[in-house]
Length: 414
Image 1: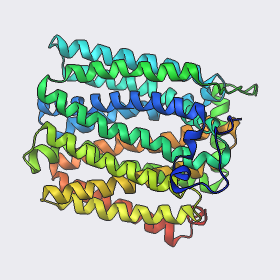
Image 2: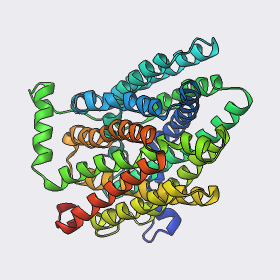
Image 3: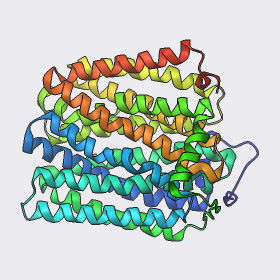
Image 4: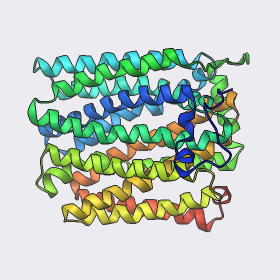
């Protein structure tokens, strides 16, 4: 059980309703630690993307790096979810943080001594992705235990704000560092940032005591998959995760190309684009947190997918930088609300002892769509054009949403 909130009111104001999850001590600790660490991760992501594109001048390699960074989610996330239902989730998370921290410092050394090569990026993003494949399900399964059930959708939305605030601060910091001192400090900062989340994991009081089932890890995986596919809404929501990540996330992966080739910008233009998108995501998360008790979330989610598709087409063919910034902001709002809603619907429908496995399937569906989408979009962008690649993705998003709506799916009824 989560601790009771520090304070409560019968009729909370809009601000209190929006930030309800912060009334829980353990949630506050995890939020602050995760925000610091995620800021470091985004700082590295910007420097990494810019450096890879400068080294290769080919958008395909941006897609390849994204593919190899997400590939471990396809290979290991189900195992990570099964392990999260069998061990202390905090210890599993700590191991993940130590591996990612070591990888960041390794990259720092390679860049500092000017011996970095493309294959170093390819190997290290795979190592980091493997650590995240085990840490991600443990984090997603631990998060609902930090608050009471009725505050779970709010906690999911507020947790999204730390990720997206970091996606604002990290790129801004990366833009400054890249412009003034180069990428080395970006990678070093990421390594240091993991200390914050390690401290927070050692301070929180909530713990998870797994039940002994007598099954093997593979038996637990099969049991989790059977549980999920017995519930139509759960597998349909997981499918939506695949579609959203396959079609939507490549927008961010291809931003270096839009910044440099289409708008004739530099690293700072790229970082501003990422920051504007993140600002939209934060805004979307706060709006969703304010109305986390809304009815018909499933129907709202499907309409949001249609809206996101329209925004994606607009950005793809915009040639006015101010308009593109506005569309990136709106796109960030739509995509974040879409993801948060899917996540909340799944979390509310699953029992705690199954949470690690079910959330691993959701993460596999979401993160599994990312490498395929990055690779496919990078391939289309390099052979046709980046705008056309994003327009094709938008068409797929809209088609999927209309199919769910017209078929009277279980998602629509939620």
